[in-house]
Amino acid sequence: MDNNIHSKTHEKADKDTENRIFEAARKVFHTKGLDGARMQEIADEAGINKAMLHYYFRSKDKLFGSIFEEDFKEFFKRLAELISADLPLLEKIEFFVENYLELILQNSYIPAFILSEIHHNPERIKNIFLEKGIKAEQIFMDDIKTAISLGIIRPIDPKQLIVNIIGLCIFPIVAKPILCTMLSFDEKGYRNFIEERKKEVARFVINSIKIN
Amino acid sequence: MDNNIHSKTHEKADKDTENRIFEAARKVFHTKGLDGARMQEIADEAGINKAMLHYYFRSKDKLFGSIFEEDFKEFFKRLAELISADLPLLEKIEFFVENYLELILQNSYIPAFILSEIHHNPERIKNIFLEKGIKAEQIFMDDIKTAISLGIIRPIDPKQLIVNIIGLCIFPIVAKPILCTMLSFDEKGYRNFIEERKKEVARFVINSIKIN
DNA sequence: AAACAAATTAACTGTTTGGTTAATACAAAA
DNA sequence: TTTTGTATTAACCAAACAGTTAATTTGTTT
Image (cartoon, rainbow over all chains, first blue to last red; front, side, top):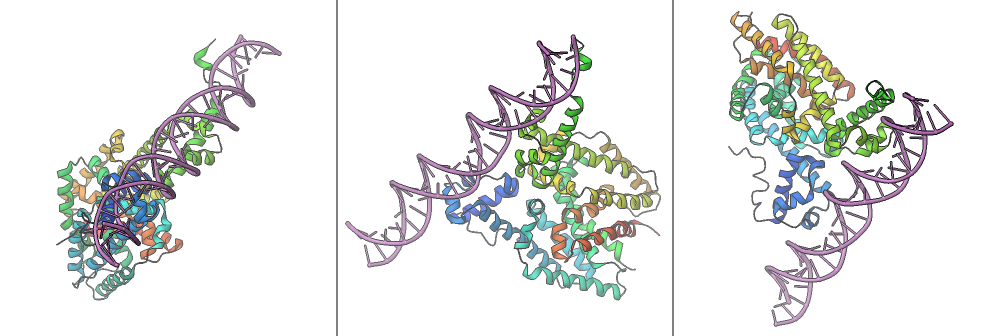
């Protein structure tokens, strides 16, 4: 499966100047953030004159905004897709955790990028409307309610459960440098730790909610 | 002339100004981040001349560094204290979740601040050594191993369990603006959601690992 | 009160930054 | 080939910025 978020929308990056800029800007913004990024660095990364950034995107803010919006939407679109899989709840949780963790792992800068930028400017989230987002979460919450009423899982606030599942996936990715320090992981050890989480998180969640 | 004793003639004013700067800088850095913060804004916040920032802290980087280090150490010192409570494992988990969530709630900018800055400069973590940190986690991991061998909880990698517990606490705080948007929380609804987590997370974890 | 040292400020400096501009290269249409 | 509109560049600009300095205030010592 192609889990790289950027491959669809800008696959011909090499040929098109606008896309070269876009990808270069994405790379720089992801690591440095809006405030830490420099237009000159983006231009250098794209191998192009700095004036072209303004020619195509007018301002730093506009360039950042278009990247942030695409990343945000794409990231939650993928989440919505996984969450909408047509599976019984417990299998869906296994399916979701495995694929969501893999998605994050292959786009490891995205979660910290989004959280960091929203932390510095929470207003930005309001400028983005999500078509499918709300619908998909509602479906999942209904799944949970149904499973509760059928006696498949114990009673639990569906919102709490969703936040639990997503938090268990995202946190260890966002906190990677801290985990590596505190738990003495090298790159390989960390990778292995996350790999094991693909099964462990689902097991952890299902153990908690399943009624035998 | 007794230089030693009376060398700091304006000691009281010193400390006061220095602390005013420190707290003002903390406030600005927490919300804007290192790159987004402005020395002039910190000076204004402290109600003093900008030159004083350099008089007391030499540079923006030094000022930021001292704040980041103190916040980081303090935050993990608190975590270590909670994690070292002398309680049976399952009670310790309840105790930890309740108090850790309250701690984060009362310092709600800290987690996103730390994660964001480490994301932009992972090297910074290496400049901070934590005396108690490693020891406290080891104690908790030993607690877990013991509980497993005593048949109190099911077998689980202690590291996975620790990351689960901490992630379940921190994630909903760090992702607050996203949760409020996606789950339609207003300020009160969010507050209530977190308040319920103080019990729900412990229940969730214990349900998952406890052997009846 | 005089001398001294530390604290504080207004004004300044050199550099970096996002953004502009005017001139040019390029490619397709005429 | 000439024209025409777009793409691209080097050079430039004004604002913002971290950091400095020289002068002044403030408090302490003698």
